[in-house]
Amino acid sequence: MPLERHEVERYEEPDFNATTLQTMLQDQNEVIKKQNELLQELSKRLIEQDRRFAQRESELLSAIQMIQESQVLIATNSSEDVAKNQGRDEMLMQTIREVQEVKKMIAASKDKKWYEFWK
Image 1 (tube, rainbow, N blue to C red):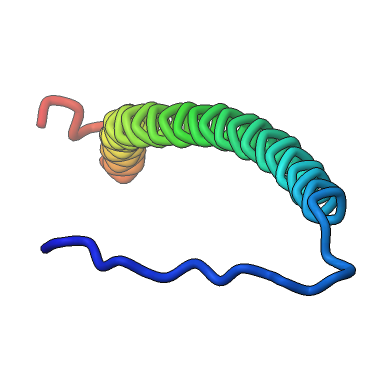
Image 2 (cartoon, rainbow, N blue to C red):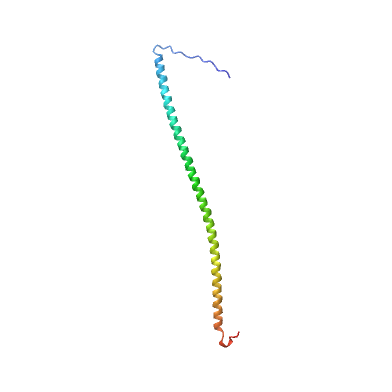
């Protein structure tokens, strides 16, 4: 696409001179420099904010991983405790049954007459 030619307007006013234009350009140049400085400062702040965000994200991911590992450990220990308690309960019930059986035998032997000792 060819570039179009535009006519440049010329100021022919008697009070307009190059010094005024130069002053305006210098003022605009100062504004542009100030804007560039502000943009650089903003850019630095954004980079720092991104760095802090990445660091915080890393810390949170690490904390989540530690929590998950703790949950796995707790679940493992809990199932081991359940198995131990179940074994302990079974042994306790077996002991109680044996004690009851012994008590029955003692009670039965007391009911026998002295002369039925051979039975």
